[in-house]
Length: 178
Length: 178
Image (tube, rainbow over all chains, first blue to last red; front, side, top):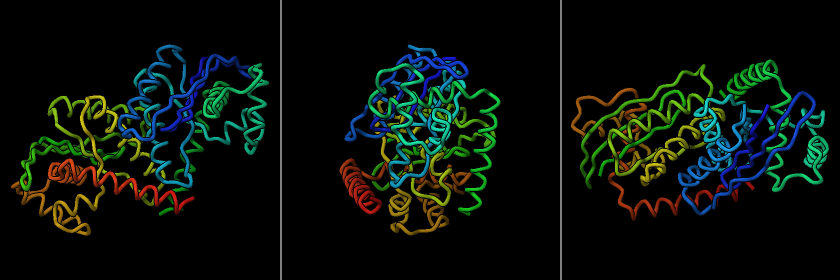
């Protein structure tokens, strides 16, 4: 199963392609789409779309995995990240590709066995799994690769479970916020 | 100047088209793109994109105005709204159309003279300005029409000022949050 992982962001949108089978994964490619912060958000999103279209067309993945957007310390960052993630979802849907979101702790748990592992530990395990001498750079590309490994290892049943859990979490969140 | 106003949202994305000259505005059309809440976010964004493409192609506006996404009580709503707004920005940029965002208080101030006007007051003024017997429905379509009027009345110079003010506000917000 060929998976394109996307670590969304306006300034740096990480991309990672991995071919995975249960318990194993092979590195295919990793990179990043950068857009200048001085550019209009609309034009930045257009560049991110073009980059994603290029990767989807080049690698023809079986699925796309996007990192779940969460509350961060800066609301403007959340909005920009959500918009970049939205473009990734849009491009996947346009190509008829199944798309899933995973939380950072799901990714850490899949790679290291612990949802609380630190970045260095995830990096070490990604290198070990993919037989790489060093982690892909920049960090956004490495995160996208980890996300792709995570997704390729989670079967459709597990994804359904994750979606149910996410819905329950959303319902709880709405309940708390109301 | 023909303006397409977009009040972004995943469930209901309001659209309004207005032809405006300083102090005057003519109603062209209003409507809403609805997507079912049970559908994947990726497919919902794809439908919103298709709807926006249809309106842009049909009306060929000179500019697109999108309501600025702000903090709301529910983080998931903010993320969905930001993603729908992102798709509107993307479609505008793809067609080479200038796109601007306006805050709800900018819209209220442009329409009623007060940034704190209530919904009823904005509705009354929109009807008066456009010579309509009643406000476009649903509320999201009416909001998009008000946004389009606001944008058509703000000259390019005012838009530049607004952008500078917004950047300053963002910088302040980042400062507070850091």
